[in-house]
Length: 159
Ligand SMILES: [Cu+2]
Image (cartoon, rainbow, N blue to C red):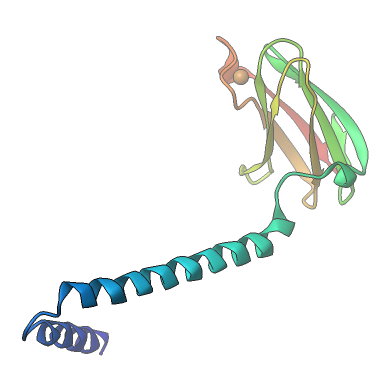
């Protein structure tokens, strides 16, 4: 059924191209008007999409950094961090590094990347999260940081 409709549209387009061509000035006047309208329609869509998606901006505002804070210190090649994180409570990881840039990548018990932030020397990144699934979470470095980067990992339990 869809194929018949598509063929019908193709035939209609092919037939519309026969006959004398319109003058260039006529075509450009209409074309420019359509293009201007299209631009404003797209701009309106972009502004609407921005307004609708802004509340879901993934970076926490300072006022959203409520909850118990847990320090995380990354180093070559491991993590100093708590062994247990509470379930269903807002927590904030205060992540920094002792030496070079590292990644702090949290993997959920199902093996999927749950959240991640950079661990940077002389700077603290705040990662605000609420864990809703209990279990064993692996932490892996996501930034190549040296010869044993591949083995740099930690873990905590959420309960
Ligand atoms: Cu690394």
